Length: 177
Image (cartoon, rainbow, N blue to C red):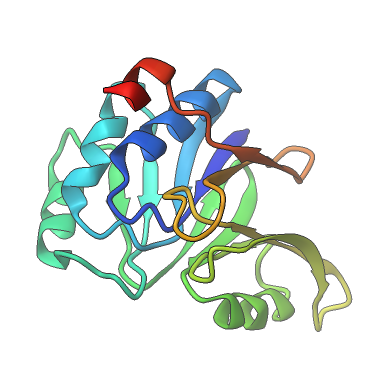
């Protein structure tokens, strides 16, 4: 199963939509958003791609009540977890949290196959040795919103546990308008 891992969109609808468009074209079947969506209405731009999105809030929480309402709609593909999330996806145990130091700590437990985070807008993909004697994959996709850093997202393959950084390529026509 391929997934799109994003974080820190900070209401940049153009870049968020472009990243999800490209991820869908690359075979992504779900989106993991590691926080700082800010306005929940920002997620509207990815509805046309019909991908389930697993989202947490970060330190720029925006309207959490509305995020909960969007998630609660019966037709919604959005699942909002709050400050962090543990889920099974593609046969892997995945943990989402906004803060890298919290993510590193969770990776060391050995309870997760993949831990994803955001916050510092710095891409970081590595394995962390855990206390159970194994390795946990750690992914920080940077900022899809392009805040003080290039706009990036990560394509993850949960079957091979490989992760590729991609720069957002906004549609030229949309960028001009």
